[in-house]
Every structure is written in C-alpha cells, then in structure tokens.
Length: 224
Image (cartoon, rainbow, N blue to C red; front, side, top):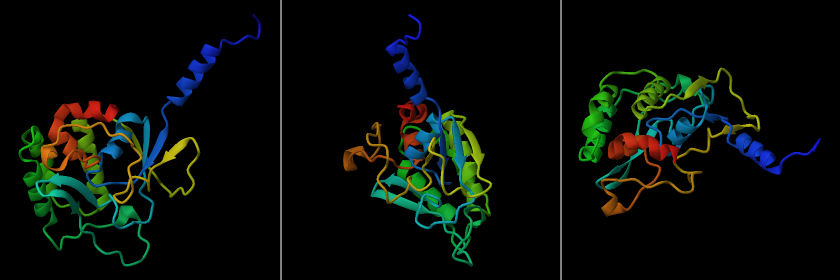
C-alpha cells in the first residue's frame, strides 16, 4: 500500500537511533573508577577535557582502592597554583613527598594476593618510578596503558577550548563522575573481590581493582 509504513520498521528505526554511538565528555582522572571505563569501553567518541579550571578533591588527582583495612584514597600531591584559576593541563605534580613510593606500596599491600596482580604489576610499576611534571600527562599515559590492558581502543580527542554548554546529543560527564557523587550507574555488575567476605562487594572502585581481581574478564563486565 502506497504511503503505508510498517510500525515494526518504525520501532526498529527508533531502536537503532537510540543505540547509535554518542560523544561523551570526560575529565582527566588518575586510575579512574569503573564507571569512567564503562564509558571508554562503550562509547564511540570520547572527548577529554583539558581546558577546564582545576578543581580539588576530584578524581583528577585521586583514586579509590580496597585495602585490607577498607576503602583507601590515594592522592597525587600537586604544586599549589599561584592563582585561583589554573587550567588542569597546567597543574604540576609536587615532588615534596615520595608519593609514588607510598602509592605503589599501598597498591601492593591491597592487591598482592589478587589473582592477577602478578600478571600486571611489571607493566604498571614503571609509572611509580619515573618522574612526570604534569598531572594531566601522567593521567593520560596511565589511561592509555589501562586501555591497552583492557583491550579497548576508544576514539579519543581533547578540547582546545573550554565548552561550557554541551550539545544535547552529547553527554557531559565532566562533573558527574566524582568521588562525592553517587554513580550514575545504578546496578553495578558484581565481580570477585579479595576482601568481599570482610566488607561485602564495593562498587565503582579504581579500574585497577577490577583488573587485578578478574583479569581479562574485566572487559566483559565493562560491556555489561
């Protein structure tokens, strides 16, 4: 019949549109939480912000791991900006403390007994030996390594100017993935954690918690 449109075809068209890949804006992060890598594993195009003003107490310079004593936060010390507003890409790592040694010891203590720590540790350890001036560069190099270990290759680009208002067809998660905010992922798929018997399953920890505990199965969990 001329002009007639099958309602099933219309439904299928809408489904394909809703499943189409979208662009997501993310902030830089140090060993980001699982929800951050869910975006990297499931989004066609990621834009990482580098022109925003640095904000303290975010994942930009901290990660959260599960230790034998419970949740532990590891923070990279930064050189205090000489002005209230300083671009994230210009933030320098402070060398006043031996933070790399402290972070690595904490990671070893927390994950040395996990099934896959021995498999990944030699790849990760060099980041805790060599010096890096800028926090942004350190984070990005770590992110690239973690993506390679997860066997994901997201399309990444970086902002050249700060865009305040993101277009409606793009997702702005720059301020939503935050240590003090509830994750936008409502139902995390649980996975084996070495301290689960003691503390129960702890969701949305640093990606290394997922990687050290389940190895190559991490990608399946991120996809689900």
